[in-house]
Image (cartoon, rainbow, N blue to C red; front, top):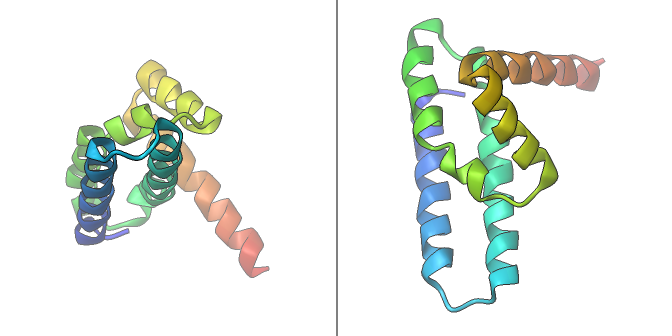
Length: 110
């Protein structure tokens, strides 16, 4: 995931989450919407360690600055992921997610 792509994805996630939170939709609909954007956030942060090494520091800072997206989600997996990040730190979790992503990629292509 390139840094520009990650920045664009985070901008879109934050824009729409902010929009939906200010809307008059039902709380249930708002939560479903937020959960879906949290899925996009999680699926893209797992690729941070696939990018260029020189861009990682800035990408990690972008992720750190946008962890509120995960915190807003009510999905059990997102709640667990946020707790794990709080306990062991962002970098180890991103490395783990990247390893899991690479294994998934290898299985998908074989």
